[in-house]
Image (cartoon, rainbow, N blue to C red; front, side, top):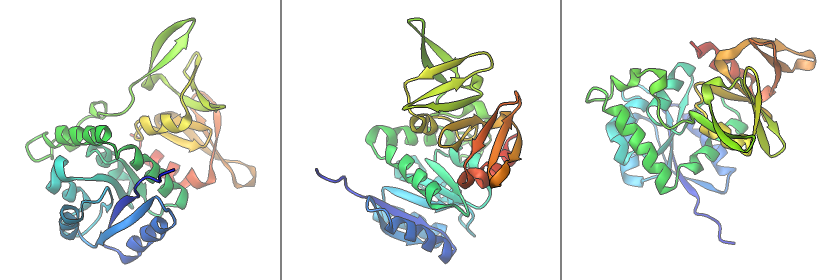
Length: 270
């Protein structure tokens, strides 16, 4: 069996320890390799144009030219697939509006890094890359230089699942994503829970996680995805575990590795 060509990664961070952290994780994964690194935005623009990496891990907060400035400078035709790295969750929505594949919040663990790499692999094909370019082009067209597009309302975001097809009584119906309260794993498939009913869909949790808008939904456990705006309370359970309680009283387990990110995401939900 022929192994696929490794993803060539460019690492951009003004902090040496930040670059080293990602370099260490990349070296653990034989399917990705380091194409180069850059310590500021100007060097990042030059490196992207010279090295043509498949994927960029791009720090948001850099002096001078920020990570978002790098994206604006290169534009949709030159910008590779991008995972934004940020210490502040307030940049998450802007990151996705600029059509980044994903964002990871410092400090991140090995599992969260692996999730970002898996998502990135989805967008290395020509069709997916073109989708990213189209999203970025539309957003940067907001006022001629991209600034207006960054403040587009949430429902103007493109590229995320808005309806899910479900089969019921021999017919295919479409459920609006905004009606989904939470999602639970059901063997290899998933169950969508609405206010008054549930639907089994023949789609994996991994696929749903990749297609749902991460500003609205989060996978809090390997078997559960929740709509963030519906989380009412975060409970600390016996033994140091955590649970989320939704407004309807339903309680769901939270993985220990996802708890800190969940707290940050909840703080950013309007």
